[in-house]
Image (cartoon, rainbow, N blue to C red):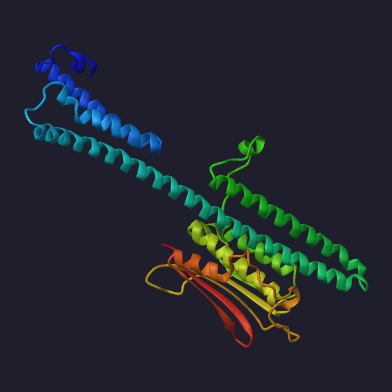
Length: 334
């Protein structure tokens, strides 16, 4: 630029013309890079300056005979600068959208895991409350039965702590961070809950209450391995939420049935998850022994219904039989 500006006199030799075209190309590339990577204010100022320099580069070699021709020539090269700026700005916009999408996905995943943590811990804590209430009832008359209840309370507390640890590890993984130290190298990556965890949830529900609990599920590793992880995780969440609601609102239900089976037959293979309970005895109404307060932090059955719809399935719940209750989820396996 300095050579063509201060040359005495400017020439139209081929070498000089080629050098000027290289200069213009370099300026347009700079405009694109500045629009892509520089700060917003810096990009605006620098792109304006570089675009003006690129659009007037040929005027240093030869001035057109009229002002209109000079303006037309400069406008033509200014279009190239505008196109370069638009290209860089478009790339910046795509990157901004990508970063925003990643942040939104991480936030959504963290919120989902936090909701899962709330509901898993609520399931264990509700069991602890039931056992503590039972210990208060029988403590005075049958003190020898209190110790087994305390052991069950301890086991439920440890289960709640395990659920929190597991979810915190998953929260860290979803945020792109990992535990430090030995835990980062020795611990295996946390896995989402699946069908195999349903058996443990049902067993803990059975030991913490008096209801007759029946589980209908094929526990073979081959069958469990064929279920997609997201479907299995949703099935586990449905069972945990339904059992927690039974414990909270129908604590004296005489029987509870949990069914996790294929079918019914549809155009595509599905997994049907059903949790039903009998009518509470003793005139118990909604709320049971644990009160009728809502759980604003939980995702609840409506949140699980949205999750089932996201998988292409359905979740229905309502009165079953005479004052009983049933939750049924149908989840496609494709």
